[in-house]
Image (cartoon, rainbow, N blue to C red; front, side, top):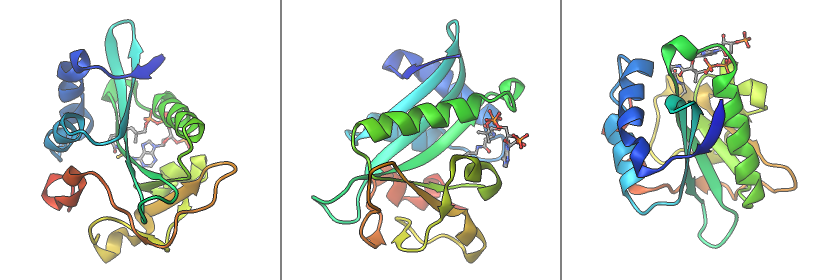
Amino acid sequence: MIIRETTPGDMAQIMALYPQAFPEEDLTQLVTRLLACDAQLLSLAGFQGDTLMAHLLFSFGDTQPGLQRGALLGPLAVAPPQQKQGRGSQLVRAGLDQLAAIGIAQVFVLGDPAYYRRFEFMPERDVMPPCPVPDAWADAWQSLVLAQQAPLQAGTLSLPAPWMDPALWGP
Ligand SMILES: CC(C)(COP(=O)(O)OP(=O)(O)OC[C@H]1O[C@@H](n2cnc3c(N)ncnc32)[C@H](O)[C@@H]1OP(=O)(O)O)[C@@H](O)C(=O)NCCC(=O)NCCS
């Protein structure tokens, strides 16, 4: 699988991937709005030939402007026939390497700890998600401090505007 940053020409395949990977959740609006806004993002995709296998977004944010920058990992989608073959992991690791290279200090995720602990994500208690999440999701909020970096100051993670609308991603 070849991993590269996405371009506008990949949009049709990205929009086709999300309903397959998330049949019970519509994340296409969130992804469209994130990719359309001027926000600082890293949008990575894995291809085999010209075919999109997996897509991952990181949105940059902080708890205090001017201090360390963080990034939110998500959403992450692997085409169902391609799942459980290491593609999601490959994309996450490539993304974490790129974020480390540009000085991102800490990466956050709201996801299944059983999956994210393989990348050494740990439960996060000092930095809060941009919108309240149900108590049942408390363990899903995790973070990873990248090498040579210090964690973000405690506070609420500020993220690009689409993340501030839980209707696009929330329960
Ligand atoms: C979750 C997802 C991104 C993982 O990508 P993948 O390429 O299938 O996973 P990998 O091959 O890298 O890793 C496989 C491992 O992850 C585990 N795994 C896969 N999906 C999982 C999930 N939703 N929760 C917990 N563990 C999961 C597998 O059991 C396997 O575990 P093992 O290594 O102990 O055998 C992918 O299955 C997917 O797109 N699922 C649907 C969308 C989704 O739930 N995304 C969640 C992120 S927002």
